[in-house]
Structure formats: C-alpha cells, structure tokens
Length: 247
Length: 69
Image (tube, rainbow over all chains, first blue to last red; front, top):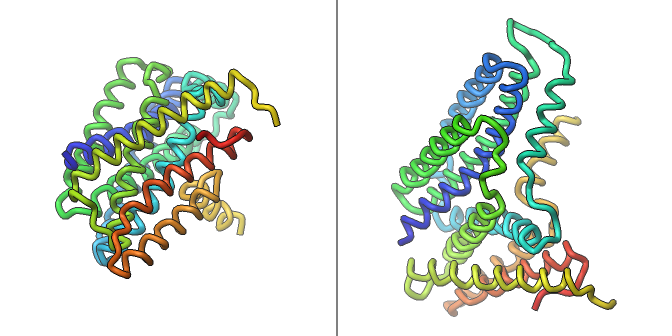
C-alpha cells in the first residue's frame, strides 16, 4: 500500500510541477519558434542532471532519523501550502488557477519582447524556457529525492513516478498543443497536498522518535482522516462565503 | 547582493511560502513530538491534530474570518 501511495504522491507532485513548466515552454515555443526554446529545455535538463548528481548522494550521508525529521517537516510545509490553496480555491475564496490565462500572458509577453540574438539563439526563448524548466525541474528533483530518501531502494519508485509523469504531461502537451486548462489542476493540488501532509506527518514523527501503531498501516488512516477534515473545511468555507459572518 | 537576496527569497518562498506561522508551527510540533518521545512516551498522536490545527489557522488567516470548526 505504501509503495502505491508513494508512487502516486511522487507522480502527482511531479506532474503538477511539469504542467507549470510545460505551460511556459508551449507559450514561448509556439510564439517565437521551437529551436531556441527546445535548446533551453535541453540545457536546463543537463543542468538539472549535474545538480542532482552532485547533491543527491550527499543526502545518504545524513543520519536517517535526522533526514526523516527534515524531510517530514519539508513535506508538511509544502503540503499545507498546497492544501490550503486548493481548499481556498475549491471553496470559492480565490479563483481557480487559470492555466489558459497564464498561457495568454506568457504569449503576450513573448510577442512584445525584442528579437535579441546571441550565438545564433533567440535569447528570450532560450532564457525563458531554461528558467522555467530549471526551476520546476528542481522542484521535481527535490520531490523525487525527498520522497525516496526515507526507504532504501525507493529512489527507483519515486524516480519512476516522475518519469511516468514526464511522459504523461509531455504527451498531453503535444496532443493539446495549447492551454492546459483541461488538466484539473486544483484537484491535483488538493490530492498532492493531502499526500504530502500524510507522508510528512508519518516521516516527521518517525524522525522525532515515534513508532506508529500498525507501522505503514497508519498511512491510509492518516490520509483518510486528513481527506475528511479537508473536505469538511471546504464545505464550511463555502457556507461561510455564502453567509457573511458578523464581526 | 541582489542575487543573494533573490536566492534567499526563492528558498524562503519555496519552503515557507506565504504563511510563516505554518512553518513555525510545524517546527514546534515536531520539537514537542521529539521531546515527548524522548521520554519513552507514545507521541504519535501529537502531529495529526497539530497539522489540522495549523491548516485551520492558516485558512482563517487567509480568509480573515473565524477558523473553521
């Protein structure tokens, strides 16, 4: 069960980051041409590989309990951020994330930019795609490493999940070749937030010296409890939004 | 200097986000868990309600209304 959840969490978390990167790449590539854009993507992928190769192994030198504590704390921090935003969007307090709007803004910015060329490259396309892919890719690498750090051999699981997400998102991007608003991003973020705080709670507590009742069986229990509470928060906020609170 | 500031801001935004109280609360809850577990007392029950409480507090701060109960 925990292996499946780990794969699902890493897959969804990676997919969310990749959708953001793909939105930028599509907007720039379609508007200004693919050559410099794809070179920027390749350069970012190379830089990512170097960074991960340099920093990844260093994590294994950290004592496992300290690592669990840090990883758990980070997952809780990320998960609570994502879940809070997803709950606020689901309850109508803030607008749903608009990939189509982001795409249009990126496209308009790209059209306004000058045609600056260096070393035969459209520098704007290169820089924008490089920056987008590197930043989002770092987040994916961080997700893979932190999800994998807890249990020996699970690097393969989280890396496979990220690779699967890359294939799915890339194929989706190629097929739609446009705004990615069809991907229900808030549902992804809601699910990812729940999974992140579930693993964060489990690993963080273990790192602090806790033994969970039932060991790994505690994971689905935590997930179910957090899901129930979160859906409850969505319902309460929807009701509050419709009936103003007197202060 | 501005690059160092931008680097620091990137990591602050990345890890802490827009509600530092949540990050501080996580650190406190983990520290409390470690403190109690160190005395060989069951401490698994501390973190889940702390996480729910932090989520409720963060939602209240975001909406500017009463915390969901």
